[in-house]
Length: 146
Ligand code: HEC
Image (tube, rainbow, N blue to C red; front, side, top):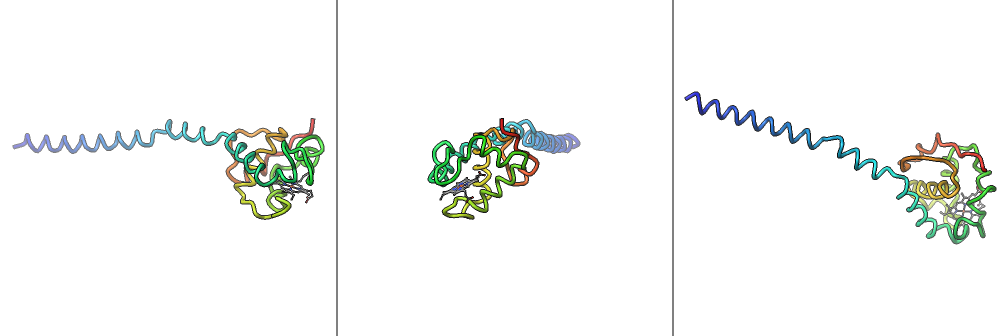
């Protein structure tokens, strides 16, 4: 009589134990870490900025940021404009005033891609993970022009 009771209890223990093992492996941090580091790379955001630049900016700033109707967005003069300032001021400038033919039409996320692209082309700063919000730009100061 005690035998079936015991075995049903040990079945219950086994079920609880299996549940625990399942919960632990589902929250294994090593999975989360590898997924996060892949999506944190700044490269996709830089590439998205390049694509958006060709769509919305190239008309006035030309291929390779060389300048045309608008000033060059690359080189010493450009870097000199932003030197010592937080990258966030470049972000705000673009968000508020660009593109010159349709200011205010870009979303914050789009402007983050453009800042990534322009900052990378000019080596304005070094950063290791994609920008998630404009706040990420506040403490990144543009390095001096070479
Ligand atoms: C219709 C033409 C036009 C387009 C399109 C345009 N711009 Fe401009 N941009 C200008 C002009 C003209 C200036 C300089 C005068 C001013 O500030 O309005 C300028 C200035 C700038 C500056 C400041 C440059 C400096 O020396 O500090 C930045 C940064 C900039 N543009 C980024 C962009 C980006 C990014 C885009 C694409 C989303 C873009 N612009 C699209 C015409 C344009």
